Length: 330
Image 1: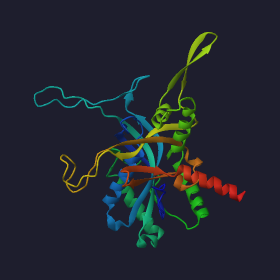
Image 2: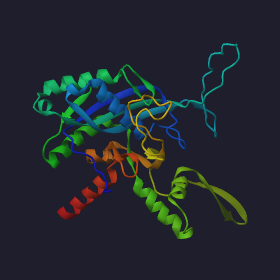
Image 3: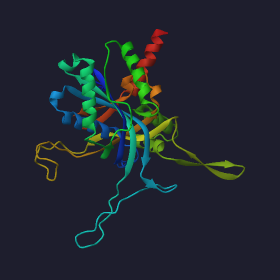
Image 4: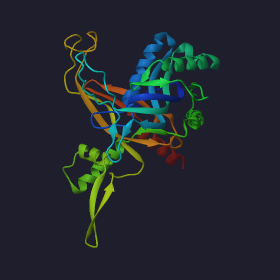
């Protein structure tokens, strides 16, 4: 299968400064912290369904910008989730505690949209009213299981219709970046995972991608000798920047079963299959380092042949295109 790329979009919808309370901090079986991109692409789909097919906006991709977070944990070196005590059972005994990781978020979202014919020809006032309606509808939903609190920002949602030329679109995105700072944008860094694998294989030829991912996701304690004394140093993988382990989707571990043939599913109208999480690496970058809206947006893809359901981000591809363009211009 060829490498997927971001579908063509007609507009960007900026939802500023959302306060989310008690979002899910357990982003995958092997990681915890800020919710991953699958949480936001799922919320994007729920938002489009809530608005309805007649609304005229098709949500294609979403950009994630974090302005702050507060994990609900305690402890010094070892962090433990703050857990709630459940009510007693019918017989008066204490119920079991189910571990729930929670995090408070302050974030902005940027949606990539495709407009129908009527919305493409709509006035700026109409688009502005649509943006406000999307903001009100979003407030009735949840983000990664967390509740959206009433807005405290003076900024309002904005729908930006993209220009035709690439230079004009770049100018529009530069103006948008001002409203995304201070903060950090989440981008994909699959390239760092593969380059680190090549580094590991120089000393350990049988190293795998899992070894490279684990080495980039943990603190490694390495002994060094100084005048006969052993000194332990902490090192986390290689590279620079705020690199994080990132769940990016799901891979099938079973065939696709027909609707209604598997007991205990959510409904009997949708085909179902069993999956496991897919992991890669991500990086938090200041928005001023992004020069193209394609570097920011995450979009869902599906490969029926391999059964891979994955969120992708074109940060590296857009960056390479930018460098090639600069080289040709020079």
